[in-house]
Image (cartoon, rainbow, N blue to C red; front, side):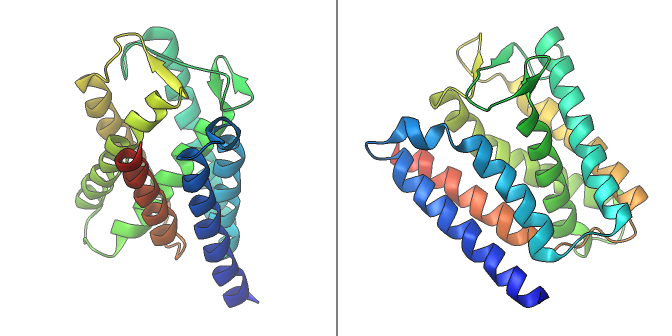
Length: 209
């Protein structure tokens, strides 16, 4: 049963992003853009189901990271002191204090993906957290221009400030240290697929739009 779930999750993930890429670069851009919240939520589910990670410590960790990510974003939006002067639009669905709920899920998804990818590459948690935060930064570099272009959020400065990237790395580093301290092994074999497909998706969108 587990291999079937794994390969099915991979197939759904790839097809979903391929269809989204086509839709966003052709005539029905608005329709596919408005499905982003659903896409991210389904990716979160595929991440858990595909790897069959339902043990309590793992579920607690990803939910706590998601909640922390949401709180950090709320503080960031309200104070402008963390990432810079930005605001979310309504495109990403239901929100809590002006931050879409799906943004919290995305923090959990990406942090746990990076944790799984770097865990066996390094022998100590500091190096793992630094490497994982760098992967997070690379993702943000290709994500930010697309989010700005498709109006998921807007920067009042009209450009993406360096502060955003520095804060993104530091917040990610702190979260990853917490993950490695709490979980004995954050392994998730869907992590490579989720991170890789999303990274390629945003790279191609940057090239094609």
